[in-house]
Length: 421
Ligand SMILES: *Cc1c(COP(=O)(O)O)cnc(C)c1O
Image 1 (tube, protein in one colour):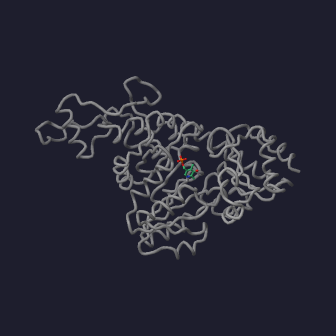
Image 2 (cartoon, protein in one colour):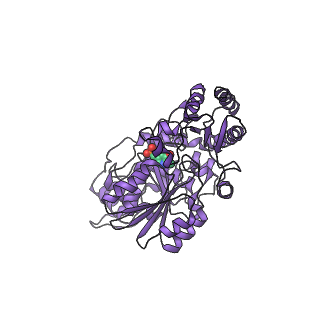
Image 3 (spheres, helix red, strand yellow):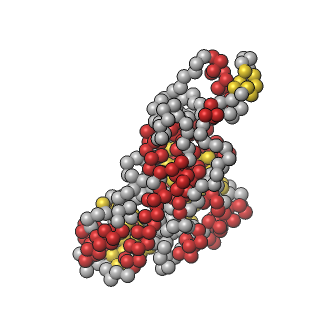
């Protein structure tokens, strides 16, 4: 189909989108169906899996082909055709389409890590003189970047206590451009009141960026609540197998295309092989989250009733401070919980060492159940006083439930707790 004539006189043809399987009037599918099918495109091999296009650059048949492509790019019409690897890749595009569908977003961007997604969003959205609000109980590297690094660029950050709506409101300044928060948080699984946050942000003309790595789009889709931009460490549940690092941003076309342009400059580009593994991991996202949600609920209830346990933090428990908000906003309470073991840090270590199935490791979201003592895994270099100031007790244990059989995990946890009492 001719859609015009370019600067050097060639007829401009509509791009290769015609052979793309994805249809414009897409049916409204549930998240598990999206996780299996969205982003699939016809390929010359009729392969069911997305081909890994391991290419740094792309060729043009002749000058007319090149000019045609350039003209289509100017008209924003060159979907499916690429020029250079930093600006686009078909395997990455397929992953981005799938991620956008899962978040009910207009568009999404893939990054080589969750931190690359977060830092690109912040550097792309903020400028010197801007102010940013961050809630505490957030990912440590995110806090360090906001507090220490952005300051060097003249971007200032205020940290407000999570869940303190008054403090959040008071902290907004005339130059506040962005509120960054997480839900559920690490390690206390605090849940954001998205309705309140969006209301405040809209009233002050401030953008919102939420890290929902712990929730996944299966349990929460913040854009549907009016949040502007969502970030994930796709390393965790989205990829789901503890074998790659990647991250993503999802939001409306305007915000994502601005960040895409910035990504093309900064070069924080994911690689096609990683996008292919992510596409594969995503196919089982629905099943994995269903299992981890249900196992974690049963395990959290069992821990709460156990005499060797002081306290459990899990949003699916009525005892959790944010249980009511979680009940309203989440469609599942997730796979991560924290708890304190009676008998102090040494008893917590004895419990962890007695476990046979959960592996001692940081991170979450893979098939394997992981366990760690945050005081040692994440805050080893701090003194006990410094850790306590951050609310990290020595006897705190974080459990990220995997997809093993629930009863095996329960039996193992019970035998581990027998070592404590
Ligand atoms: C892991 C994690 C990150 C960082 O993601 P990477 O993929 O490791 O760079 C950011 N936020 C949260 C909540 C995380 O769990």
